[in-house]
Image 1 (tube, rainbow, N blue to C red):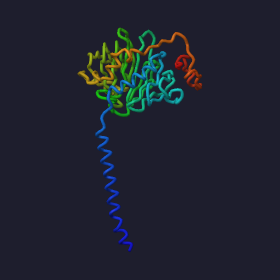
Image 2: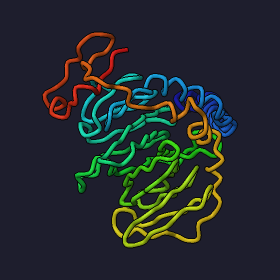
Image 3: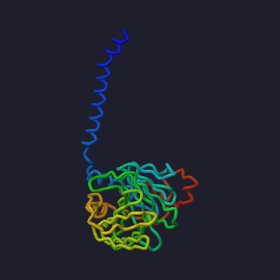
Image 4: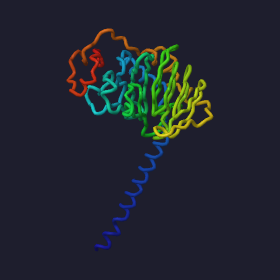
Length: 288
């Protein structure tokens, strides 16, 4: 009788295996058939982010859209429009291809630089430098945000202005805009989106032609420019072009504050920690 019972279970086992295989192949096919996110949809969300972050204080970072975080703080950096000083964060991360943060960096007599990060990107102040415009940036994957738009950051100055930042040991001096594409832990590609972009690292200097990109390997140790530079598809990214060319893109981000403002959210004083107060300019959290 026990033998007969075991035999009688085979149809059920066969059926269960067939169902499991069907579900596995169905999920695989569905994943392969997924269409990439439309760049127009990404731009729509970026417009919302920049409207929330268009008024930034010097050397501050603004939460653009989900999901993003600034470690070690969970408050007050957890929803669109929240701002904290860059120096107060050990690491700033966008946790998905939809996450965005906007940074406004100003050092000495140099003109201010606006930086926007997107995709699965992490950026943190360079612990080896005291300059507030020096950063370490990386990505956890190379998944496109949308067509021709890999994860990374765009560095922007107003037309006619000269700004400077250091990303992963590479000095960028620009008169407009560059796209920093994060390839791997020790490789990135920098693309000239507009104007002049000059690069310097490890005794090497390079002026990047318009719409060209160049890969740099050996980041943070012995950077090497992998010449020659070549025309870059990312220079024609619909998202990058909107951010750089349109008046409601990065051009809309400024520091309009003439007076010190209370750190508030919806007119309620935020419970800042003592650590965060050490970095406070008294401006970084705006009402509204």
